[in-house]
Image 1: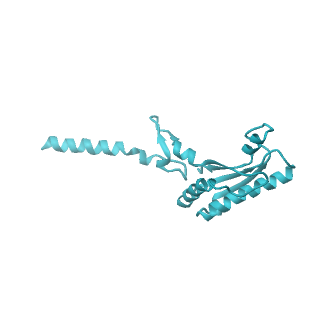
Image 2: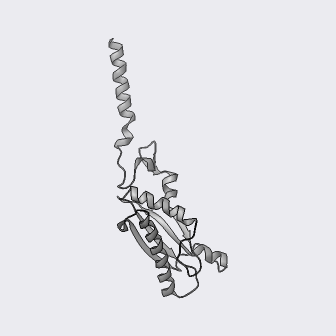
Image 3: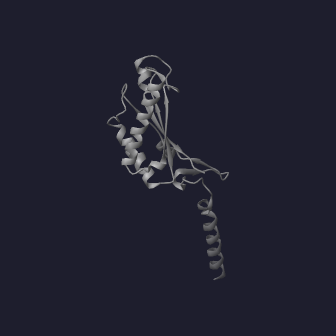
Length: 163
C-alpha cells in the first residue's frame, strides 16, 4: 500500500514538472502554439508562425487592385488578426523604379491602403494595421528589367511582435 502511494506521489510530481512550459512567459501577442521551446528554457518562433506573417502581394504597373490568388493569403491573415486582436502588422507598400518620388510614395500608400481595406473586411481592426509607403526605395531586385520591376511592385505584410 505504501509503495502505491509513493508511486502516485512520484508520478504526480513528474506531471507537474513536465507541465512547466505553460508557466513560461512569452511576449504579449505570442501564444504557445506559435513557438518551439528550446532545451535551455528559451524559445524560437515556429516556422508556421513566421511564415504566416511575412507575405508579399504583387501589383500591376500603376495598379493597386489585389489580384486573384493573393486574396487567399490576405483572408488567412485577416482571420488570424480577427482571432488575435492584440497582434499588429506592418503593411509596407513599394513600387518599381519608374516614375517620380512623390508619385511612387503615393502609389505605394494606395497599395498598402488597399491591402488594409481587405484585411479589415476579413475582420481585422484598423488599430492592428500600420501602413507605410517606401515608394521605389528598398527594391528587392535592383535590376532594370521588366522582371525586376514586377518583383518590386509589391506590398509586404509583416507581424509586429508586441512586448
